[in-house]
Image (cartoon, rainbow, N blue to C red; front, top):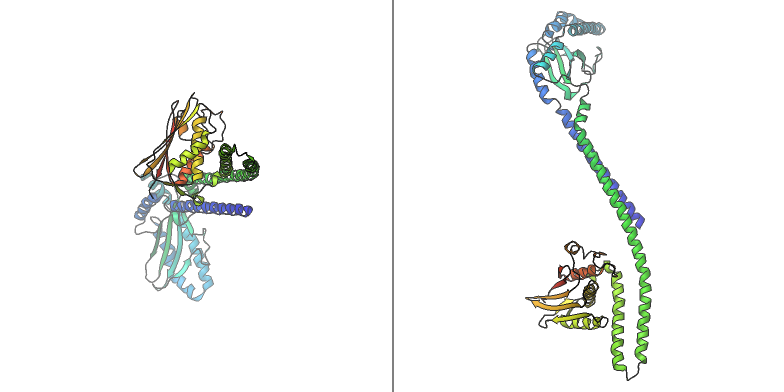
Length: 470
């Protein structure tokens, strides 16, 4: 079952990591695409406006229309005749004319002058490259229907580039993002033609430039993923250590529970035998002592079990009854006083006009004993005085345990209710640092409030505020 639980946790962690990486990759990819689509957006607008102005009433570049017309228009009648009678001769003639026309356009193109002047005039990046392409040419013999002559996807004339035949420029790698201008020009008259040409502007290493610009974002994303993985690894490792420690603690508790309960049970049996064998003359005094032994042995047994199960304290198993606090305190102080040294005094100040309160007597008694023990243990006065007060204000009952001990400084005061915490004062005294933790747990379980007032070398006062409303 434990192995299965670990597998589920690991599987959930791996799925979460994959989802995180996928989302990060998707976000970075979308950012890359957005940047790619908007790359040189301002330069594109400037170049498009300037280029459009240069070829107004012309094609491709200034003077290109005259060259195209000189190759196509005089041969329109021949093209039509061959198209209708001899398709093979038609294709060969078109290929030859196309080859001659493209060669002359490349020879007489002036974009190599226009484009640098444009870059210089508008202070654009000198890393920009351009490509001017013819992408489509069709003939119309009737002014309505067009017969394709040149297309990258049409058989016959083989283009020099997937996007068509490049007339000018050095930009070989083109796509939609690098397109600056695109025109389709037709006359819609008999013996005319339709031509489509495109101007592309970009850098040869545009994607590398985008990647460099996004490198901080990419590195931050990788760092985030690395941190998440690192935090998970550390958390998982600590969780495994804690789980192992918890298992060891559980085994330890199960082991010593038996070792503790065995001698206590022996004491109770011996006490019962002692009670049966006392003489009648000593019966009154002996019975009192035997009752104390029995009561304290039973309390010790419960205390050990409760201490070993302290981490399992909860309001679910808290059984409460209504008690009159002065009577409860007098009883427990009477038992507690039997073990006190001569230099220790417990001064009760119990206001009798208080309401009954709901509490778990065992937990409450143990809590008060812990406070009394601390008041004596952390006390270097010659005369150790512990004042136990009970008084009421409005509908609240207050229990106050005040001592004249070493006190608690502000730094330690913030930690005294933590499990296993022991202050630097009188650390040679025995204990595990569970007393005040237990006190805080009992107060929390009952829904009470606890306040501590302390001054170094003068003593401490623990005040428990109990709601006495029925």
